[in-house]
Amino acid sequence: MDQFQDQSAAATQQPKAPSAERRWWHTATVYQVYPRSFCDSNGDGIGDIPGVTSKLDYLKSLGIDVVWLSPIYKSPMDDNGYDISDYRDIAPEFGTLADFDHLVAEARKRDIGIVLDLVVNHTSDEHPWFVESRKGPGNPFRDFYIWRQPAEDGGPPNGLMSSFGGPAWTLDTETGEYYLHMFSRRQPDLNWENPEVRQEIYRMMNWWLERGVAGFRMDVIDYIGKQVDRELVKDGPRLHEYLQEMNRETFGSHDILTVGECWSATPGSALLYSGRDRNELSMVFQFEHVTQQWDEVYGKWRPKPFDLVKLKSVLSKWQYALSDDGWNSLFWGNHDLPRAVSRYGDVAGYHGESAKMLATVLHLMKGTPFIYQGEEIGMTNVPFTTIEQYRDIETINMHRLHVEAGLSPEDFIKGANESARDNARTPMQWSAALHGGFTKGVPWIEVNTNYATINAEAAMTDERSIWNHYRKLIALRKAHPVIVYGLYQSWLDQHPDVFVYTRTLDQDRLVVIANFTPREVPLTVPSELAISGECLISNYEPVDALAVEKIDLKPYEAFAILSQAP
Ligand code: GLC
Ligand code: CA
Image (cartoon, rainbow, N blue to C red):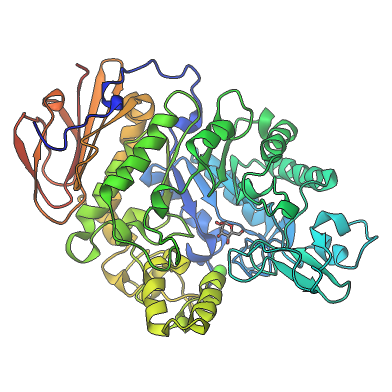
């Protein structure tokens, strides 16, 4: 018997009937656009809404159903729009409300829904609510935010720390009180315990729903139930009560997609957020699989070596936990994470093969796949050499803190090139033209130097490109219910190099096999999986049959075979 043969109880699990309720977003594929970096229509170096509209046909030909737009609201852009100063207007550099309405209408013509980024844990310090609030106790907006008296020594009220470095409290010298900001000091946290705050947010959400949006991605939504005085931020006691209230007062009566960004989510809490009868959200983003490599002390700035057994166990855990109720989101990357192919693949040796392998493994799981812009052409991390090339507030703050603490600037840049958020934020590479065809002006952040070879125009004309592989995966999801609803089961859990799983629904069984290494790997196929069938997708020559003997997987080889369920 193969040493990696799966002994887990899961391997004997019997396929169950799929959940009765089917929703449109079960079959959808979502594409995240980071507007600033997607397409610049007017040459000011900043991507904008007309730029997104001009690329709808591109998205349609890829097969996308939903576009999640990172924030486009009015904002001083301290955190690239995650600091909103007017929830009902568009940042001038991105366009106008008319441009937005036009985008929604043009998207609808192509059966594409627009999902907005809802940032309601905090606002900008330039939001009129905060401008009023900081005028002092007694102002009607004082309690819209979280103000506290200094500690006895005059310092911050407690030890809460900001995600962007330093204390989460800033002293307002005018009134002598501190306000809370879990992110930059220009992103004060709203006070969700105040019912007026909640009602204002709901009114705003309804205003956008009436404009025809197809859903909301909810920024750090697991923070809104916080209890500041207990230093309890994520997953606070009133979180689910607020979400149910929000659902009732806003989107509950609309057939939309909602996804909560929840770094604290566990399989247990995900069932609360996304359970069928919970009336909260469609699904959440959990980050357990993408934080596997984070260091206990230095976090993402000093990633540990990749460990496939660990990654598989996390992904499988989530697949099993939400198999009967709740729903998974599936993603490798977003605007806060490094490029997937750089982290898990091999850009130098097997760029195409590894990017396609990663896509295959993810898109054939159960859940709604999210593609981050540029992932579909295999965009890579940045080759920056100095901190001046970075734009992200988190990276700039962390650079200062780490270098002050003694880390060499070179070592910091090395870590940043692997983990900083700007890895995902360099401009979309459309063509081999100057600046990758992103802008006719000077881009706000440098384009990755590899745009001459990695770009959408080249990818679309090459039948064997990463882009065409994604296109095929998206189409397969629409054609085969087993991909959407099939029971997930993992195999060979302890195998250090290969990921094997099956999906089963009625008469169909899909076997997915992927080599995560740049080496040839001999694999003994478990006898239950030795079948012949139709190869739905492969990143080398199609494989139609598996025999109970060693097969040699090529570097980063991945394929899926559809056959009759045993
Ligand atoms: C979320 C966003 C991130 C932002 C932060 C504060 O994590 O994804 O980009 O900086 O919230 O809004
Ligand atoms: Ca522009």
